[in-house]
Length: 161
Image 1 (cartoon, rainbow, N blue to C red):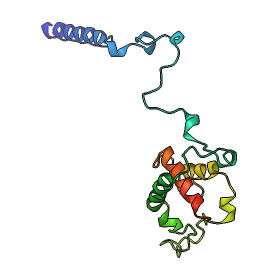
Image 2: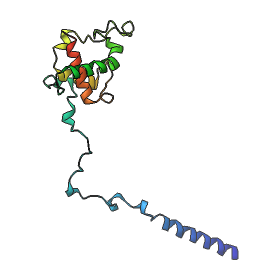
Image 3: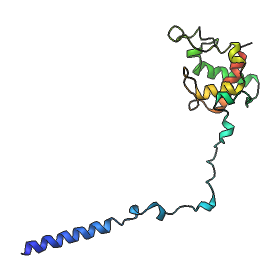
């Protein structure tokens, strides 16, 4: 009989410990957690963050009228040339026509950046294409920052001359 009482006492002690353990602080609902009240408004933006509108257009259809935010000078065009050599030359080639690129024999439908069809669009359109890509071109919105995309657009504009 002593063993039966011992087993019952151990079981009750185990259940009491389990009940106490379920009430630890991490077990409470989110409503019980400390947080800022809603009447304080949203948090301020992170230091150095730029508003979405300052990043430039994302939809090529709506972007034709968006002006280039990078000043038109030789230094910005040269920076765009260097970025173009890194990101664009492998497919579009140095001339921008796509015919002198290494992938021209495998990927013949590369857009001709010097063509009147491309050059007729506004700077915002080119920026949006670089940002979001096309069905045949990858998006570079996460790889190239906004200023660098505008610099590439400045350089692409020199190809038609």
